[in-house]
Length: 121
Image 1 (tube, rainbow, N blue to C red):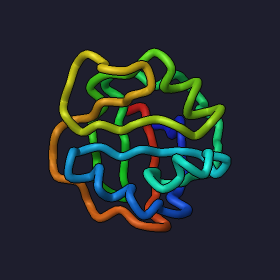
Image 2 (image 1 turned 30 degrees about the horizontal axis):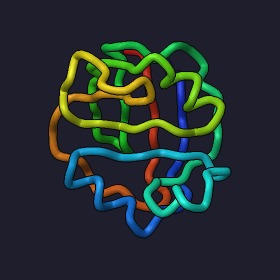
Image 3 (image 1 turned 120 degrees about the vertical axis):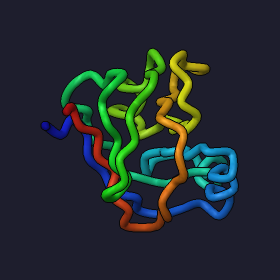
Image 4 (image 1 turned 180 degrees about the horizontal axis):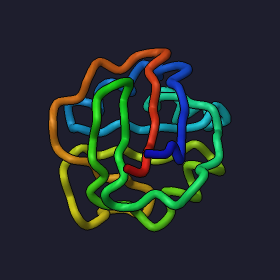
């Protein structure tokens, strides 16, 4: 098992948690435009070490989620802007180029300090 991406939630926009009921989490780097920050979980901009692929695993703290599909610009946007949408719907076909789809299951509590890690198993 090796880590290909690691980050921590730094702040949470006042409207960001509303998307959790839709099984969505919007990440954006700390340079996000002010009009978007309200809807995002803010992280540092950190490079992705390897290409993210279907079958890799996202850990939210210690909770494991298998990646079911990867939009075309997920790696690029995550590494340059810290911006992707995590969608916990189990879709095997990406709906949008910047969306990372994950297995559908209940999300853990997400707050400032929550660790995000993508691993190859």
